[in-house]
Length: 341
Image (cartoon, rainbow, N blue to C red; front, side, top):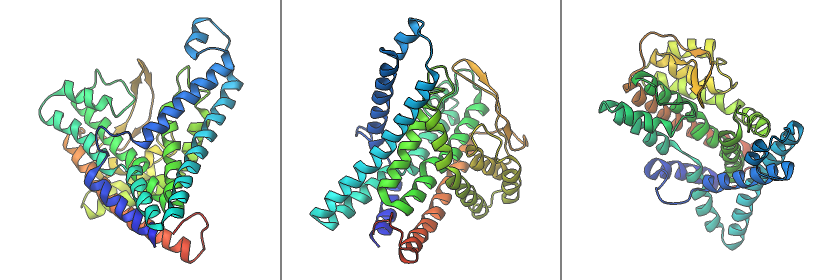
């Protein structure tokens, strides 16, 4: 089956190469379209940019912004799906081998295992060197919270949370959608994820226009987040971490987050490593209260970053095996029309 082979090869290429620096990534293109379409919709609503509307004291059009958010979400997600589908369709008309190569390349670009490890380990390196200012700067590229006042343990905690959450968002969820719908559905998921990261904020500008993106992200991640938690529990057993703690904290704290999905993997990581994640942090200068995840058995240390990355890698390999079986079952047992072989 070509999709299974493409999935395996794309996974391996990602582990070896990661995201090459200096090249435009498709997610950057998706992000560019999100920004341009969002700004265009805001101009359509107010007759000017959002910033100009605020400076002129124009009344907010809450209902209009909600509708604009749904338009933005539908256009970006469906547009991404059909563009990738069209490219693969044309490639298949030219030669099936070209389609296979392109789909393998697309799958490689969808996954982010090595990139997640590489970026998180930059924080680890700074902390290990005792460069707290450098670690704060590195973690600021990965999280939305304010990082200027974080101490060493808080920086390490933010990095661990990023790895745990993005194990689901950046690796396991994409693999799941690739398994049932190939690269087109995998990229559609990345579009949902990119929308969530760019417009699903509770600040003054985005709270309404980002509503649809946030809700769709919650829906799309419902199954993958729970699959990720199961894979991470299995990984903690393989790595001889505290698997009983992982299960206990997962059962107790898996909903201890503003998102219904984000705490699933964070709870497993916290329990497996006997640390506490979550809690209140500042965003854009304002405190945002969040529940804690796990027990405060010991402070989070920079070595926990390496441990969480080990959970990431083992979970990724386990998920790849499960997704290959899922694709096989869908195609040969159910005749799944979405999956292309």
